[in-house]
Amino acid sequence: MQGLGKLDFLHGSTMSRQDRKRLLIVAALCALLLSAWVLFSPFGGAMRYQRLHGELADLRAQNRELLQKNEQLRREIDLIANDPVYLENLARQEYDLLRENEIIYRFDRKGR
Image 1: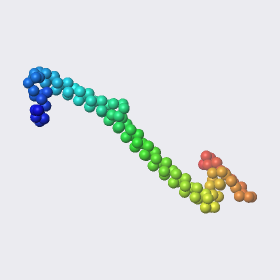
Image 2: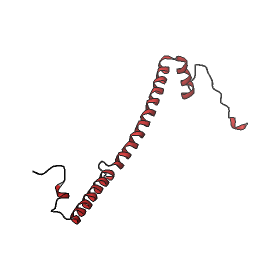
Image 3: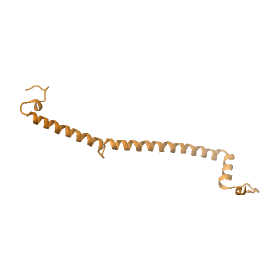
Image 4: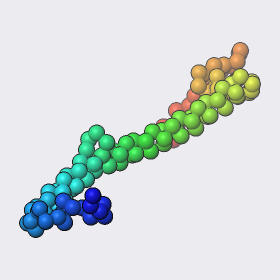
């Protein structure tokens, strides 16, 4: 049995120097094509990874905004449920509700 330190098919006497060159060129082309496939493949390449990474960042930003909005709505619900002054002001401003025997006077400010 021959030593395993050498690749006999590359250094052996059965292949000519030109055949070894051709084999190395073919191997280099295969490696190049494989690398290009890994980088640009629509099924899992680096380009897809970059796109998905950007989408993930966008979704995380949207999630943060929604969490802030939810917290703001929770505070408002708490005020409506527990603060009668806030509830009265909300009813007056948003829904134009009045107390009994109350009249609202509105003046047009365009005439100034």
